Image (tube, rainbow, N blue to C red; front, side, top):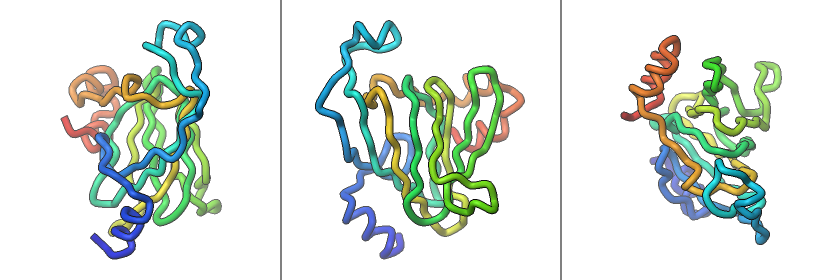
Amino acid sequence: MSLDLKNIIDRLDLSPHPEGGFYKETYRSKGDIPQSVLGANFTGERSYCTGIYFLLTSDNFSAFHRIKQDEIWHYYKGSSLYVHVITPKGVYKKYAVGTNFDEGEVPQLVVPAGYWFASSVKDESSYSLVGCTVSPGFDFEDFEMASRDQLINQYPDHQKVITQYTRM
């Protein structure tokens, strides 16, 4: 691990994330949304909003997963980040989150609730430091890691990308 990467992990107090990479929750609103307002999709109340730092290295990836909320990605430092998205209707799109505007990159990206998504670092031997904001606030109860076989059965046209960005 490079000194710069170790410095970022130490300075931001990042921990390993279950989907790959490192993270730290940096914000959780004090107010909560009652479950009765959220509807049957949610169990229990949720914070209005949460935010994290997320660091991914080029020798790793964030595996396909989905959550019940919209997630906003924000680019901070390092290589641009690819976000691989499969919509509920089976449309695949690869977005680049970064600041190379001439190459079509965007510094902010919204992944809608219920969409499968994964991420990978664009440049070899590099890392991406990004932030993610979730509203209603993130809870691991709302997190679903993709099963490779299940996702391929559901979206066989995307077998290659699904195989590349799943672990099981």
